[in-house]
Amino acid sequence: MITWLIALPVVAVVFAVTRVLLRRTGRTALRWVVAADALLLVGAAALLAVALSDGSAQAASTATAAQNSGSGSAALIGAAISVAGASIGASIAVAYTGAAALAALSERPELFGRAMVIVGLAEGIAIYGLVVAIILIGKA
Image (tube, rainbow, N blue to C red; front, side, top):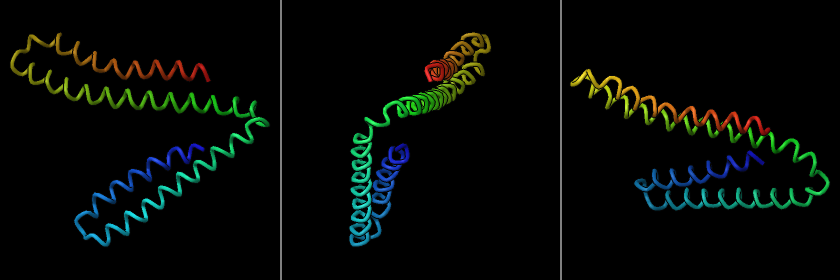
């Protein structure tokens, strides 16, 4: 199931990138590639629909097993996403605030304390993501 959830966005990105890249090569090649990508996207969506409908038919017999195994893995995936998103956001924030702090310190060194507080606040974003991940792992 997780494979399909990962594969559909990948197929959509490949479809979009192929369309953009082949826009310059010619109309015939573009039409063939877009048709092949669209067929692949429709096929993947159909397989996902079949997988989801088949899972609902078997849900009554395996309800307890799915609750025990699915909730823990979903919490771990959520924890990984929260840490990754917070780390990426913090790195972008630290990049901009750190560069601005260095520029300000080169002109006025007495601004060191203020600059480090601002950079520290940007680093706090990653800590928030870590706290959310710890809470999610505790629920698993």
